[in-house]
Length: 291
Image (cartoon, rainbow, N blue to C red):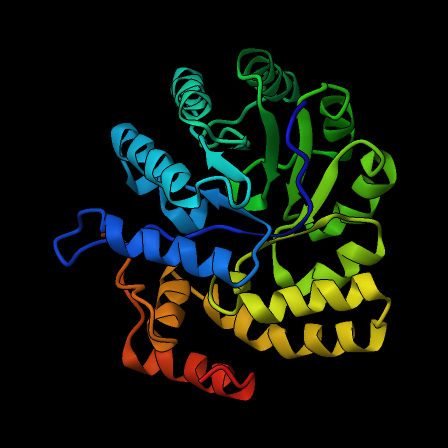
């Protein structure tokens, strides 16, 4: 059977040395930090993992050492996104072979794909890679997956979850496919809304830096403490907005630096946050009681 996903998933950053090489030891430490704080699953090589800045061989290396570091403690969802279908399949087969539990696939980007082309892309991935597939819909890819397309894809047995970053349609999507797909919000600012509509949880940006707080929101909801969940939701919004303000994931890495973990700079041409840009993040963390 395919692995089931729910709860608070988080997408570790890929940490680099000063000369821009992958810092495996620091990235492994970050992975274990997330697991030790209770995160329910890890999506490696999402946007926060800077997959587009890595070669295919570097991506494979990250997938492999992530599976090794996790060592079965939580599900590993390997990011295999690319607009080259052959590259997606190559990475997907590698992820399966090294022991990943699922794969994470962004809508193909850059070109003006038709709906039929997008459906064919995902159907091909699902037929060739026999793992749980989480599809990722985001306006940042330049092409929205309509509720109708998502509904069609949800009928494929191993397309089992969705990261939905189009807030305008998440209610429509859940009404259509909530009984077939585990739907995760793409940003923590609408986690409570997603849960109230019947969603499975979050693929959490904020949880990369403050996993305890995001898990507390999720757990309050599960216990039926709506007021507490609402309080935490409102408290997290300022930090979430600061972490994604520009040159994503530079803000997330700045947040990690501020809590005492290595975040470092993103790979060039992305630039790190300046000290001036870090100050509001530090204040938001202080308000949450993290610093």
